[in-house]
Amino acid sequence: MHQASVGFHCPECVKSGKQQIVRGPVTFDPIVTKVLIAINVVIYLWSTNRPQVVEDYALRGGFDGVIGVANGEYERLISSGFLHGSLFHIGFNMYALWILGPQLERLFERPRFIALYFVSMLGGSTGVMILDPNVETVGASGAIFGLFGAIAVVQRSNGAKIWSSGLGPVLGLNLLITFAVPNISVGGHLGGLVTGAAVGAIYVAAVRARQNMWVALAAATALGAALVFASIQISLNPF
Image 1 (cartoon, rainbow, N blue to C red):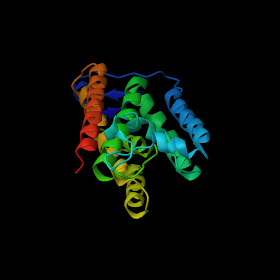
Image 2 (image 1 turned 120 degrees about the vertical axis):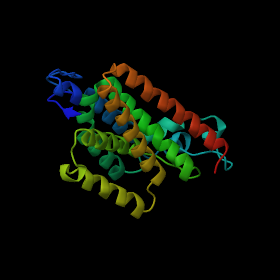
Image 3 (image 1 turned 90 degrees about the vertical axis):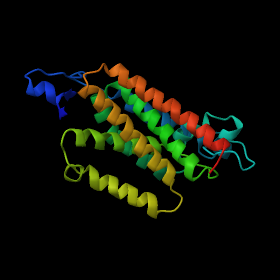
């Protein structure tokens, strides 16, 4: 797949002299990215010095005697992704969102970008349920790592080498920090990364197959539903 000035060019179409392009507006305002950042910042300011907010909305399994996903509080799979533990935590995540978000929002268009963000967040929550279900977890990192995964897939589909593009070193550094620094959710980061790559692959495959991109959106949504189901089941039957 070749990256066009706006959207994708299907390789087979280019060879045949025809082009199939998923178009975005020529002048583009990444409004979804801005709204996501604003929501995260407002919630951070609101929750600062309010430990009960974290208690009520952070992600945890809930099968160890405390209230959580296993007790029917499924909203924690999403609400935890809008909470942050420190100014550095939210600053790092929002900076990454501002760098990555506009590119993907323009490339995939807004509905599919929204799906990518939230399905990646659910993937991060599933990763937490697998590896750290008893640890109170907050942050948008699962969704952010999902954006990294999606961009990596798009670059590879265009024939680009992520190590040459600069994405590889940045992603590698973030993975090193994930494993080397204490109190960072390995499950959340890896779950988001894998899920984002999967959603990116769905979108790329849809373009190559010349399918309507709403089909890709439906497939991504189905993946999100499957992740919710998996997270609930894991919370009820922990490893």
